[in-house]
Amino acid sequence: MRQPANEHPTARWSLYWPALAFAGWTLLGLMTSLLTLLGFRITGEPRPPAAAFVMGMTDMYMWGLLSAAAIFLSRKISLERFGWTSVVLLNLAAAVALLLARYLVERAILRSGGIRPGPLVQSITRSFAPRLLTYLGLLLASYGWVYILKHRERELREVQLREELVRAQLGRLKAQLEPHFLFNSLHSISTLLHRDPAAADRMLSRLAEHLRISIRAPDTQLVELEQEVAELQPYLEIEKIRFGRRLRLTIDVRCSSRLLVPHMILQPLVENAIRHGIAPSVQGGHVQIRAEQLGDHVVITVEDDGVGITEKRDTSGHGVGLANLRARLEHLYGSDQSVDVSQRVAAGTAVRVMLPAETDE
Image (cartoon, rainbow, N blue to C red; front, side):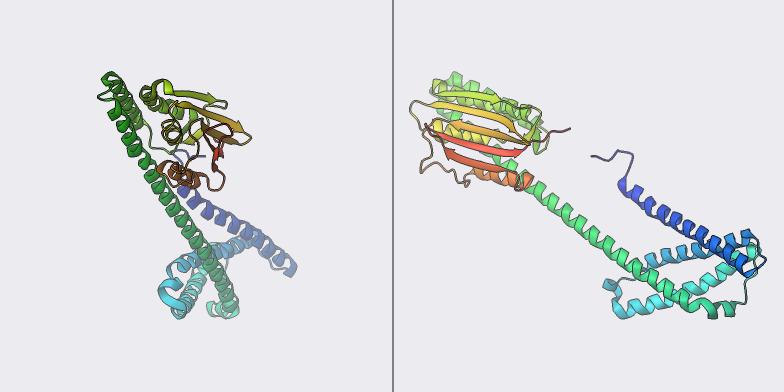
């Protein structure tokens, strides 16, 4: 999908259209030469085939140059800059000048090919009006073509601006998670600092490991599921130290670990489950993280058997974790994603995230 390093798309397309135009005018020149030769044979005019070739090719190549001039003028003499009256007058003046110059150049080429053209005034009187109408037709087509190109350029710029805005918003949303996670981790460490210094020291070591991984992580929005699970481990170890036997954790990955998921998608889901489901429960509980592929989507589920949905537990998406997650998924996948929060039948809460199953291949 990416362009090769030594092949710039703009440079390739800039050569494509002139080459196509040259091939088209050459084909028209050959056809005109053939028709001119047939005219010589029908009228019995004693001219060689080379003369028909020179006349036909010269006529079409002159029109090719005039069409290039029309495109150039349609770019330079725009309605935005000059207005209708000035555009019409400037283009009419340019058309007369270009057609008169064509007569002079054309006659010089024909003479160099051994063909004697008729009197200049007679040639202008006979063919100037139809040539002017033909050129004006080319000019109108050029203005239409330039308008289409400018419209596409505007659309491309708008798309690029939207992409830049989305990237900035995603970066801001992702950046919100890091201080949020750091604050909660330091709070957990502070609760053990005086009660169990050794456990607090182990938690601090795991936090340093997590921050080291975050700093080394590439500045990207999507990572492989395997990396996402690996980066979650230091946080899980911190919480295991904090809660001890009150917290049981299970990770069940039933799909390819190469699937791409949003970076730091698991941490806020697990954090919500522990903080709002397990922590308020006296006996603690079990948090299960499951990932599976269903058709062309991957489903990530984080379940806990804690206190369940209460008035104090925000599951509407207005908290930092879920609101952040919903916004990121909407930016990344549009409507092709979903986040569902539900009360489990037995006890606890389940958060189910569905997103497209994509790989980096």
